[in-house]
Amino acid sequence: QVQLVESGGGLVQPGGSLRLSCADSGSIFSIKSMGWYRQAPGKQRELVATITSGGITNYLDSVKGRFTIFRDNAKNTVYLQMNSLKPEDTAVYYCNKVPAILGRDYWGQGTQVTVSS
Image 1 (cartoon, rainbow, N blue to C red):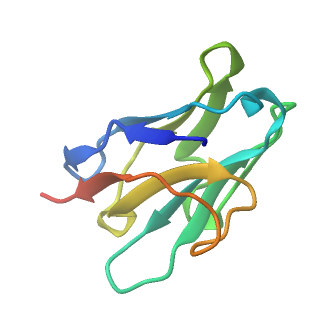
Image 2 (image 1 turned 180 degrees about the vertical axis):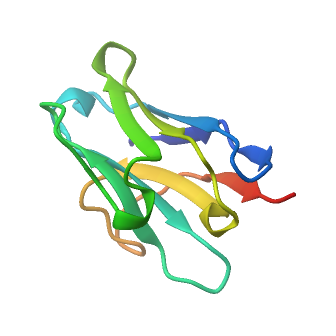
């Protein structure tokens, strides 16, 4: 079974940066579109950024220009570079294939990102 292990979260002040990493144990990582999702308290999980197997990226409007998704297929790892962080970016961040459905697909534990002064 595929395992997803997210890391890199933490507490950061507004305007700060974090880089999230996600290691995928699956054997077909390189051909999958991957994404970073987030879920804030009391809110639904949302898709923040996606990257295709060919490297085409797409972003949620609220993070465009601040977040960058990239992947290293040799390491089965997808990353999310987050700059100019805002308090509204506070959430648990998860990586997964795109699309992935809560309640149907496997999800990792996620990594907590807290933006606060």
